[in-house]
Amino acid sequence: MKPCSVLRFASTISIMLVLSLPLNAAAQSAEVAINELSALALRYSEVTAATHFGGPELSARVSAYPNSAVPVSRVVENAATLWLEQPGTLVTEGQAVLQLEGSEVHHFLTEYQTRKAHFQLVKKRYDDNRALFARQAISSGSWQEVSQAYQIALLDFEHLDHFYERISSIRDDHLQITLSAPIAGVLMAADSADTALFRVIAAEQIRLQGTLTDQQAELTAIGFGSCQLDIARLEAVSQGFSRIWWSAPLTTHPACQANWQQHLSVVPLYAQAVFRVPGNSIVRHNSQQHVWLKSSASLRLVPVTIVAKDADSFWVQSVALSSASEILSQSVSAVYGHYLGLGGE
Image 1 (cartoon, rainbow, N blue to C red):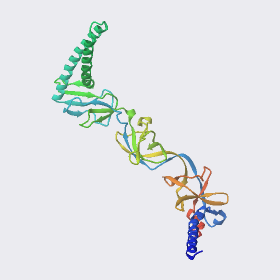
Image 2: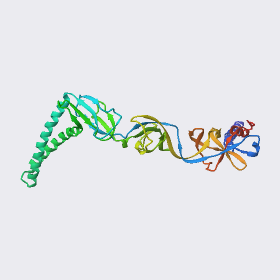
Image 3: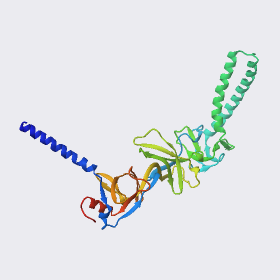
Image 4: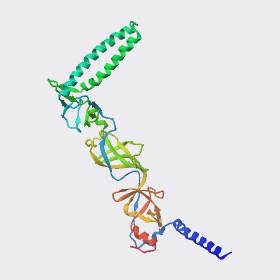
């Protein structure tokens, strides 16, 4: 064999040996005999198994599903407005909530009466001709013309009539009207560019809304104070790296009291099989978190994955742990130092 070939062969063998060392070292079990640790004060804790765990607080806002409020259309434009009840407050069905005043109000009332009289005439003609058409006393073309005129008049009048139904009082000079809430719920103001003058959302529709960073654990509930609400909906489509969640209605539990659009900090509850371990039981080994798992005669390092922190504990996942496992919770660093040959604390 040529000298250069010998050198290349030797270099290859050396590289293979070097690369194999970490693998061999990693394959060796990190274990320490308990009888070697008599000089240390050892204490153990039993892990707690759970199917759910609480995570770091999330921001939430009192809201409702889109388009779940009942609108009152903006039929009268540019009239002066006076709120009789402040937006965001609870109102009852039929309660006076808003006054409109000005010449625009007088114009609406006049237009309403004109459209109403016209609709009544068209409807009478429609009813009379329907009876004639049933007896085949008029042609199909004439009946179609009458029906079409009725449908157009009905649509025009219904738009005004629905708004008129919300009027609870009219001032004698016809320059001011008072509007009432269509249902019981939270009164909501609308922007000037909105097609609605205001909206009312039923209390049963009010819930919490927030965003959740995409992760494997399933969000099942949220809580604040003594209130806990199940998650009713988790949007399927992500917005960037997060998804929108919605809770069950606040009326689900009496303890769930919050104001419309109020911002809250809530504790999320996730569904995932985890173990609760003391915070001081964690030791970092080979760039991964571990705990010392106790057996009858030894302590063995087993890897864990931290999924959440809870006060002075961690929620972790590990295939090596069970509900009966005992782990080291005192002198953790000292035992690791002994394992590395560095002596005690």
